[in-house]
Length: 142
Picture 1 (cartoon, rainbow, N blue to C red):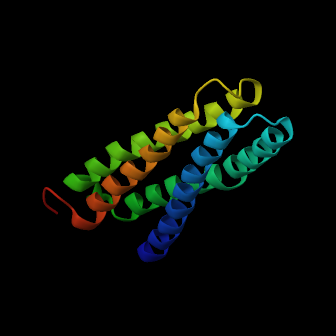
Picture 2: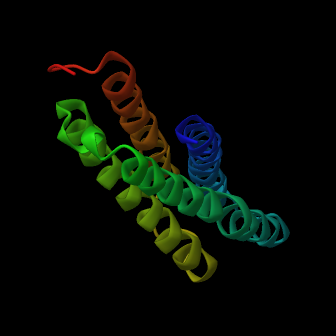
Picture 3: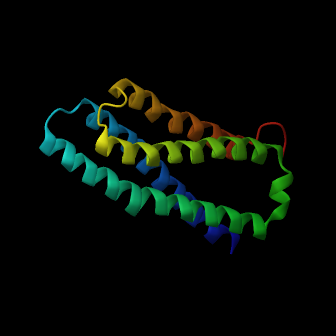
């Protein structure tokens, strides 16, 4: 059962990460766009990506992660899991920031420059690298 839950978790995490990376890229385009019709189209894409893919994937990743911990509670004692949890808090923060700016950009499309969203686009990537290394390499012991 654990491997099935883990497979679901990995699929959900991949979907969540893809959504987060694409969402911030859309925000770059949104912040730099001047044509109303294009901005309106971007708003639709952003809303659908966040509400239909990214957030549901985050919820499935969270629930399947919790299920794995219920099935194998000893994982909580592993030092690498603490690294993963710390980076995961950063991912939740990024998701919250992405959700906030999806709403803000509707009324204030120039609230932040495109460069801000380019930088934000890199944050989930760095966190993903930390999480993958923590889970696969398991630094600081098993």
